[in-house]
Image 1 (cartoon, helix red, strand yellow):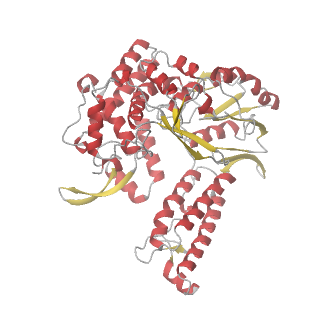
Image 2: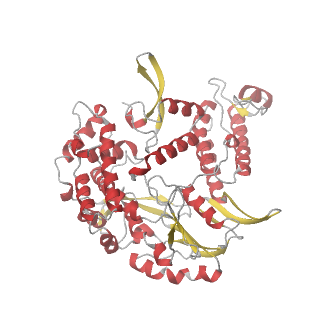
Image 3: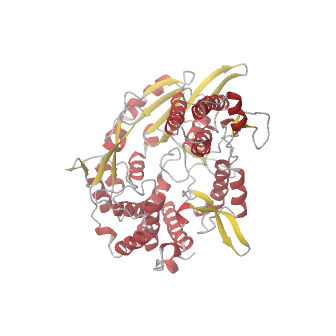
Length: 549
């Protein structure tokens, strides 16, 4: 596609839902791919030229408004100005205002400071930018991200497109498997990473970016807490769209610092692998990382090796969470427990859901039952099924069979208690006859909670099939134009694994594309089923939630 032909990408003034999002998405995607390819070929002048084009692009502005006002979880959360664009007419008006402005002259407003609880009981500070700042941050992110996708290390997985916690866990499994000599683990965690990153280091890394002045303004914009303006001299505000990308840019370079070297493999895929002479490995996810070594001395030496790396970036290690352990003692990472066990077939590495992760799931289910006390079974099933499916899908790539059985039993006891409270004067026999049936898909289990009105059943975790996750290959990025088929195949597999059989059938019929905007279903937006009018009548179709009028 020739981007010069689509450079205008004008919004139709007939209405927000009359915009042809497929054309706009193709234009932005093509420009991102060109930036990626130019960076690969070290054509720095071309990279900057294309970045300027994307920063000024009306198509990029439209997509950014769509993401900020429709897709993001915080779309209804205003900044210090109290402004949100929740209606289609307001989004059109916002576009008309911003399209007249020069992105390079934008002056951001201070972020609104709020706090959310952390798992250790402490509070995590969030800085919520204004809606206009969030739009411009997404514009900048689209221009900056493809360039750094070339530079980022292959073992970095946090806040990167098409990379997940499961990729990080799979990488660790490969490094610590039975045949590996790497048995010692350096568990690392940066202390207040987002809050203490060195501004000068970030500016140095992004100095050649056309929008570097804008990045500097965001870093220095400060925040408002208790009606008081406070300045920021370090860190990136958690809550901003561009902040995770800036944090990844700042943290890039650890592998080189600790001495990890890659060597080209001459396999059909033509990738890279860690040099056999290199006896250490690393996996990074946001501010959590794990370094694996062959000896205890190597693991303990990481404290000293990381010192210059940390000094440049203005951060320190959290002494509470940083430790050296042996794989036989086990450790927790990203909600999973990794440990080597002695079995009848020798030593084997097992990855299971961690105790903290199971406890969190139990607390969420417990709180749900407390909130839904006295509510009918139909509503209980409607609220519980997504929770059960969510945790089950997260755990399904590891050894989770016993965990599934344990959680199913815990939920059953909660269900039985709820039904007894719902019908205090009815016998247990009456309750079981009314609410428990065999599963619709077959089986002898007679204790599946079933709504007597809708016949919808409560999901059991043990129904979720356990299958090994296929790790993303080396430096593969969705911005690489040569990997289009690779990502389409991977997206389809991810969609099939996360959705019901009925949705899978619908997706296959639609070619895994939204029935309204014709974009891929796996683009980060929520998907739902709607009865749409076609020439032969009404048919159920899968559509993105933001596409619904």
